[in-house]
Structures are given as structure tokens and as C-alpha cells.
Image (cartoon, rainbow, N blue to C red):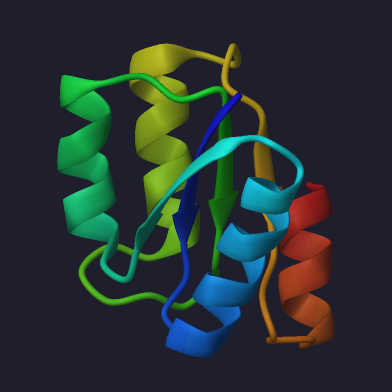
Amino acid sequence: MRVAVLQNDLSYRNLISDIFKRLGHTCVTYGDGLLLSKALWRSTVDLLVLDWNSTGLCGLDLLKSVRASLGERVPVLFATPDNAEHNIISCAC
């Protein structure tokens, strides 16, 4: 499985990437949402792991863009150190 990770925090990004790689998956990481958005035009992924707060393009805006262009065929997981209740609720909606 090919996984793309958008995470602003480098140590958290590396942790997520290491977990997927240990499980045998290919993982490409990004610290900037615009760079990930551009990369999605060039290649496909099987899973997106997004952060709410990232530079360039936040995870929620990237999700909206992905859903508009790719539909719901790419699963998306939000993994973020931000535990604000309003973000958890937003993700569930």
C-alpha cells in the first residue's frame, strides 16, 4: 500500500512513516499541504494521513480538494497531536 502523510511536526511525521514502513508499506511524507496536493496530481496513493494544522494547505482543505477531484476512493485518516474537541467533532462530521 502506498501512503502519503501530511504532518507539520517532523518528529511526528517520522514516527507515522516508520510505523507504516515497518508494516511493509511505502510511505511518502510531506510537511506542506501544497506540496502534497501537487504530488497527488502526479501519482496516486492508497491512503492519506493528514494533520489539521500544516503549512501551505491545511489538512481539512486538502481533504476537500481530494474529495472534489478523486471522490471517496482514497481513505483519509487524521492523525494529529492537536486534541481540541472541536477538531475531533469536525473530523467526525
